[in-house]
Image (cartoon, rainbow, N blue to C red; front, side, top):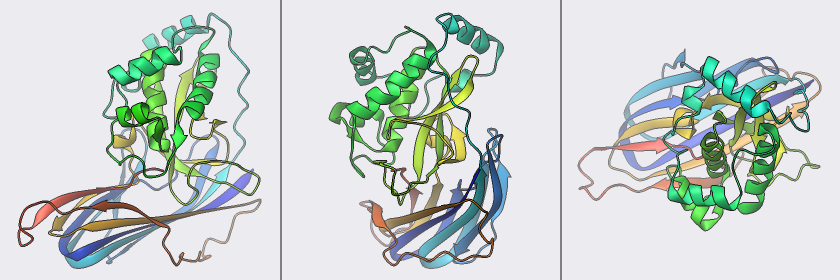
Length: 327
């Protein structure tokens, strides 16, 4: 059993004062059989009233509206999570597991995780990659997913900020470069291509000195869960060629990134926006003090994204979408 404290800082800076910010966040870790969120707080500046609800997949969604002029928006999410060991997966399943999978799909509610979604869909580039990686029904479902997890790790070069938050998977497939968001979308689309239900997981990855993960440590992370017969939902991290473990802290589940962005909102005004993100995850064998204050990094991590104002006159207020890419 391990305890993790997570601090996720987000700052939007605007070149000119804007008149309103409307925002949703999905930063509250989930609680399930192997993960339990002990505490969660969300602080917003400028100060406002924050509301919350759960969506149809059980994700915690916080939302708020900040009217009035402001030049920056700061969101600080802090949580303490208890993690238990995830049961070890078998090495393989029996060859008749494909039939068992089809039977589970026919009798269960998996249609959302099998149909094409906003970012995970079949394209000529994806079908070409499926042929190149020999993604077809063979061996058994688990062996195929394990192999695909490794093959995508080898196929893609991890390059932070190479793609945008709204990039289609073709951009990463054609270039062979991308971030965890691209790895996850590609793997989901390939799994659905052979009839394996797959979903997108948003969250955080804890790393210590002995881990050699190539994903960015000071950002949110994304990976994949596949439904397998006799196993259930199992997590795979193609960015780092890992089976999801207690180091993977789940915040939200969805068909793809469009369902679970850490931040999703709009601002009204004529300005450019710059997004800065810093994520800090610490581990311990005992739960940390709930009132412990983690330091704010001086550099606020790196500039993640810059949104340019449109070609319309600066004096005309416009609406600009603001989302946070997962690196």
